[in-house]
Image (cartoon, rainbow, N blue to C red):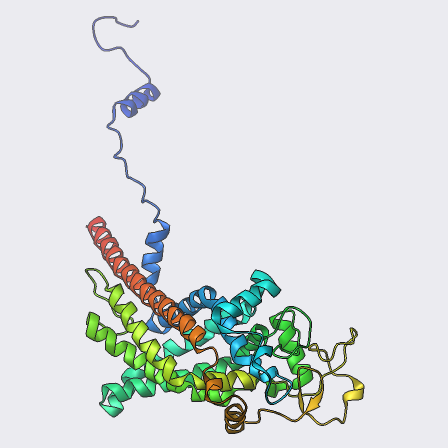
Length: 408
C-alpha cells in the first residue's frame, strides 16, 4: 500500500535525470573565431615577402602601366625615327617624308590604320616591360649598397648600380624590343612606299617566327650596341632622381614615411627633371638603335601574293644568295647601316645633325609621362606594400596576444 500525503511525489530515475538536466545552468557560449577577411589575409601574407620579391613585382607592374599609357606616343616616335631608313635613295625630297611631327604623324596613323595602328607593338611592349623593370629595379636596389661599400662614394655607387642594372635588363630583353620596334614601324596597309617598313607582321609571335626563319638569330640582337650605349641614359636618370627625391622629400627611392603624407608632388618633380635631362643628353643613341633594329638583314623572299618580302619565309631559290639589305622598293642594295659607327656616319651624311634628333619632341612628350607613370606607380606600390606589411605585423602580434590570453 502506498501512502499518500503532502510529500514530494515519487518519480523514476529517468525523470529525475531529465529534471536535473533541465534545471542545470546552461553551458557558457564560446564564440566562433571570425574568418579573416581577404585584406587581413593579404596583410599577414605580405609579412613573408622579401625585398627580392617586392622590388621586381613593383617594377614590373610600374612598367606595364607605363607601356599601356604611352604606347600611342611610342608608335609615333618609332615611325619618326625609322622612316629615314626606309627611303629608296640617299636623299629624298622633304615632300616625300610621310611622318611630320607628333600631331601630323598621329593624324597620318589614325587616318590610315585607325586606333589599332596607334597600339601596334603593345603586346611586346608590355611583355618587354615586365622583365625590363623587374630586372632593372631589382638589380639596382640590391647593388647600390654593395657598390657603396666598395667605393665609399654615393654618386659612384648609384652610377655603377645604374649601369649594371641597365646592362642586365638590356641584354635579357633586347629581342623583345626589336620585335616591338618592327611592329611599331610598319604600316597596317600593305605597300612598299618609301618611308614605310618593307615587312608585314600580324603580331608578336608572327614577327618572331619570320625574323628567325628569314634573318636568323642575329636579327634579335640588332641595335644591341647602341642600346648598351644608352646605359648612359639610366646612369644619368636614376642617380639624379634619387638625389632630387632625397633633397625634396628626405627619402630615397622606394622609401616613404611610416606616418604622414607622401610628397607625391616632390616625387613627380624629381622624376620630371631627371628624365628630361637624361633623355635630351642621350637621345641620339635611340635613333641609331632604331635604324639598326628596323633594317632587314636578308634579301626579300617572294610571297604567294607576289609582294616582295612581307616577312615571308625563305625559299629554296634563295639559297646561295649573299645576304644584303632589302630596300623598301624590293631592290637589292648594300647594307646602309653596318655597325654603330657606320650608321652614325651614314645618318650624318644623308640627314645632317637633325637626323639624330628625329622625333625628339615626341620622345620627350612620351618619355617624361612614361617615366612619371613608372616611378609614381613604383613608389605607390612600394608604399602600399609597406603599409600592408606594417598592418600584417600588428595583426600577427594581436593574434599572439589573444592566443596567450586564451592559454592562461
